[in-house]
Image 1: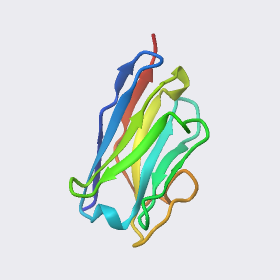
Image 2: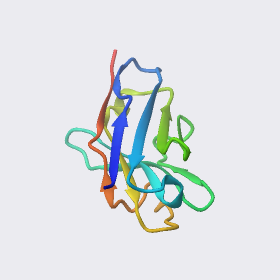
Image 3: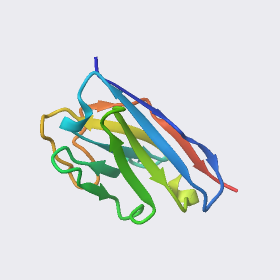
Length: 126
């Protein structure tokens, strides 16, 4: 059974940092492209970052490039999103998602998602 469980969200002041985690189970993490989306109230879902299966290439939305870093620990079956220099416009629910086609690649700044986590709230406010 495929499961993605996000954690690490919370309230942070502008300029602060958070690290999101996505614990994956039911599949071998390193074989698939996996990444993060976010959705703010009243806005469309946005692909934030992705890491591919083949060579661990990473991709980012322009809005987060240089501030966010995606990584994964295959031994722990966990994907991380390190978020630095946070801005109020980063406020959103962040979702982890995976493309369960073997050898899958990122589609720009996000995977072609088959499965989603439940999301974790990130609020950037003073």
